[in-house]
Each structure stands twice: as C-alpha cells, then as structure tokens.
Image (cartoon, rainbow over all chains, first blue to last red; front, side, top):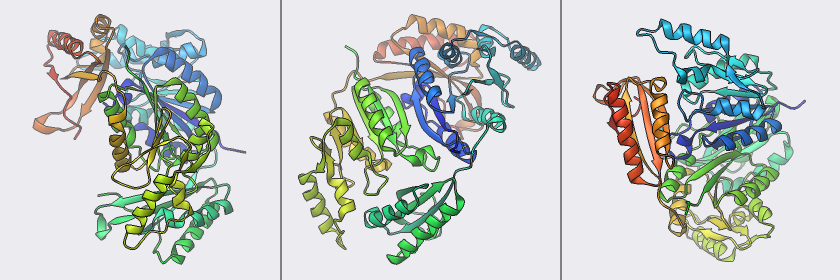
Length: 263
Length: 263
C-alpha cells in the first residue's frame, strides 16, 4: 500500500514579493516525511480570492492531504478561511465554541483585549470545520475535509501542526542515507550513480554538489552529497553501501552523513 | 499597461523532502519586483518527468515569464532540460557552440576534466534554446520561448539571472513603503486599515505581525509592520502617511521602515 500524499499551499503576497522568506516549507517537508505523508508539491500563491479557491479545489482533489499556511489573522488581507468555505461550498459562520474560548482568553488578559469584529473573523470557520487548537493562541487553525489550515507565523504554525499531527493517519516513514565525499565531481560519477539507481528502483537517489569555504575541523572545499531515500531502511542502507564502494573505487574517502554546514 | 508577470518553478526532490532549504525564491521575488515583472506564483515540484512537463505547459501559457531553478546538472536526476524540450515539442540536441566552449574550459583545467557523456548532457539543449552564459560555470542555463532555465545552486542561479536580467523587458518597478509600530496588535487596527486599503485600490496593503525577543538599541517586543506596495511611489507614500496618522491617533509611535531583524 502506498503512502498518503501531501501538498502545501503557502498563501501570502509577502512571500511572493520577497519581503518574507518562507520558513514553513522545510519544517513541514521534514515532519511530513517522518510521518510517512511525503510532500509532493508546494505552491506559493497570493492573497487573491479566485486564485486561492481555484488552487484549493485543484489540489484537494489531487492529494490526500492539503496543508495551508498564512492568511488566517484578523486583517483585510487574511482571507484564507472564507476561501476554504467557498471552495467547499459551505457557509462561513461563527464557531460558537471557538468564540467562547477566545472571549474567555481576551477577558483574562491585562489589560483585557477587545473582542471586536476583526477578531471575531478568527472565530469564523467554514461550516463543519474542526478547530486545531494550540498553546500559542486562542485563535485556531482548522481542518475541513482533507484541508488543514494553519497560521503563517512559524512558531504558531509549528504549534498547530504538532497539535494536529497525532490525528493524521500516516504511512511508512521516509528514511534516507547520505554519503558525502570531498573532491568528487558529479560529472565523474554520473554513469555509475545511474547504474546504482537502476539497481534500486524503489528508492530516489539524488546527487547534490556542495561547497564550503570554511568549516569545523578544517573541513573546506567542494564535493558531492549522495542521498538514497525511500520507505525501506534496508534498501537505503544497501544503496548507501553501493555508493560508498563506488566512491572508494575512485580513490575518494566517502563518509556517511551530511557534510558539515557551510561556514 | 499592466506589468508582465512571472512564475517560478523550483524543481527538486531535495526541497520537497526538507533536505535543502530553498534560497532562490526570495532572491528572484525581490529582483523581479525591482524589474517590474512581479512574481505571481511559485511551485516546488519533484524530479518527475510527467510532472515537470505538465507543469511547464500549464504555467508558460498563464504567465509572461517562467523561471525554473534546479535539475540541469550532469546526473540522472537532472532532467529539467530534456523536459523543457518535451514540453515545447522540439528535439533535445547537442548545442555545438556550447559544446565547444565547455570543451575549451575542461581542457584548460589542471588536471583537465574529462568531457564524458554525463557532462555532454549539460551541452544538450532544446532545439532553438538561447544559452544563458555566466561567469561561474561553462555549463549554461537557457531561455526557450518564455521559459528561463537556471541552476539550483544559489550562487550559480544568481549569476545566471544577472546575466539574463538586462534582456528581460520589464515593467514599472514595484515599490513599497513600510511603517512599523511596537505594541500595536493587528486586531486593534484591522477596521481602520481596511478603510485605508479601500482608499488606495491600486495598492496592496499588507499587515505582518512581528515579535523580537531582543534587538539592537534595546528594541524588543511585539508589533505590526504595515506594507503599502504597488507601482506608484507617490500612492505608496500617501498610504504610508495615512497609516502613520492612524497609528499616531491610537497613541502609538510609528516608524517608517522595517522593524530591526529578530535577534
């Protein structure tokens, strides 16, 4: 049985203008891989109603899970929630339990926070949505069908995702083994690497050149990181062993694991 | 006349698995805005032939320019170039001028680099493509129709983009003005901000909460950054003035420009 699949929609003009560097894709990609729900696509789209609705309907039909980040705050440019309602063809209505929890939270603050019309938007959900409550804020994310709607601020998004994660039905975790070697060029190993890929058709074998100007313990220079990835740890290990043997055969000194970070 | 539009395709399993954090989206978003070719969408897709071809054909029909990053190296997982040929329905053939330039480069190295079959793939382009040559490598990117194909390694991508940029017919540069204020919550300004957005329909006005634990000159705490963006600098300035006035009216001390970075 194959693993369920995921798509991420990053919703926000600020990412498309370059103002903000997205920090959610890598977090979710990593966590979803660990849960066996590999991320198959990510899209960055603007805060434009027709675009959000059309994109939601396209990807929710194509993937088992859709995660969204951004656009669920109280201001006029936060339109993700009402767009989800429109995509599902359901009313967008005040969620009474959420309103009560937010009212309680706002009243407890010192000074108390006014529960005005803008904040009430954050208690308004597509009819039938299930709130995702987290420890960072009383304004929730929510799940509607196979669409999981989360905040864009990374620490709030992470808190919402970790609250949601135990309820996601995952698959076999995706594991990877990495072998790196200094002074090896992709162009010199391509043919042998392709032969190894052919021996392990269930794995994805990737080749990533790197360059480090400096590094810990005198590590410096260029090389290649070769990654074998899939749902079978034993296959990934066998492929890593074959890659190691190939590199040794060329006189290189391969090391298991990622090269040290650039520095 | 409206500005030409752009879409970015980030091609690579390594971004979707979380192994690599993309560093090209923010660079290109910023530079394209400066050139008046605003980025309207970005997609991260895997190294899968059918996906790349179908996505290319979808977005090249929808946007004035399509930029791709990744998948043009010499290994088996580098398939972007042949997928562009397939998308355009043209043969994928050795580009003789490029082959000669690469051969010259490889022969000059000490020790010389073997111009093998894997490296010859990097001199193989869709028929009719125009190479994008840069100072970082003799293996080129290329432009095919409205599709601009670049490397995934950020410093090479940037070098290719800057070589290409002067030939791109841009529009009116996108400019923005930012006002930030400490101790202001989005929920308290949403209604007034929406009214300002209504006065400036040609601008995009965005609201971005921030939080800094520490910062230069004792700067710390939470607040909001309000951004007015569009192709008219005078409109953006007028909107920033209205935002400043609104914030002062609430007793806040607004400052033009971004808040100091987190620290």
